[in-house]
Image (cartoon, rainbow, N blue to C red; front, side, top):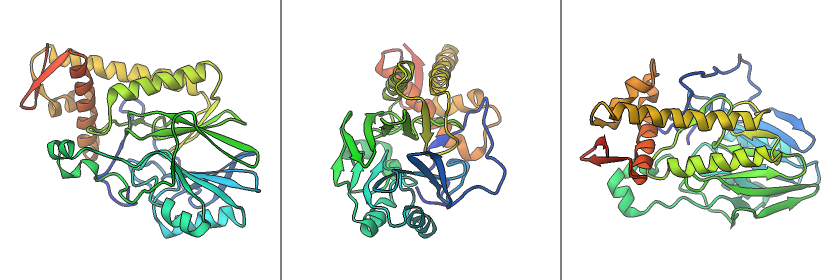
Length: 316
């Protein structure tokens, strides 16, 4: 996503407990050392949808690093990354997904460093689906993204003293990956799990059923002690990942139950749910909320619990 566009939002803040951004100054452009193997650089693209901005992570001790979610193609951000990396060799540029606030800087960073772009697959939305949903269905995505290597679930990238394992987490978008740092128990969660907000699931590419399955997967990983801290692309680190994911699963089930309960009163269009489910919602987030409701409705339809006719939904 671009740094100033508000119509390509993809994060929908918690309506029940939204955390406002911390007081300024924010550490935009500074390299923050989070743990021995991990540094963080904040891009200058804050908005109601990206919190304080997109966070790029640099993994490595100095002999060779990986850059995760390089962020927007912004001159100031690229300069900050250059300063943070210094003379260090960049082994790989990894992208969790291809929303336009995450992957566009991959190409210029690759040109500067010679590093390969690896990670998620390019987004592909079928032409018939685009025709059904409209030309803007893929506008929020980075059409320039061209990876040198696509990582499948469980595949690894290695460098001096670090190993990153791809964890497939479709749902927010179909091509979303998380990356597990095997040496420390950290998981780079992109937009799949964030501490400051829920992640909206926008059809046609976003899929609520896939999103819930991916949450279940991360819960199982955390339950088994595999991931001890999350580093999301927006917002603070998550130090109690199992607790947060359990809450997110419960939040989504609560939303689903609200939808079913409202449909029990009679047929509704997707937009009808928003004022009842999201009290006091910022007007800029109304469309995002409607799309999140639509994702739930499509999942319920797939499970045979609701049906639609000409945009009107009802229970079976």
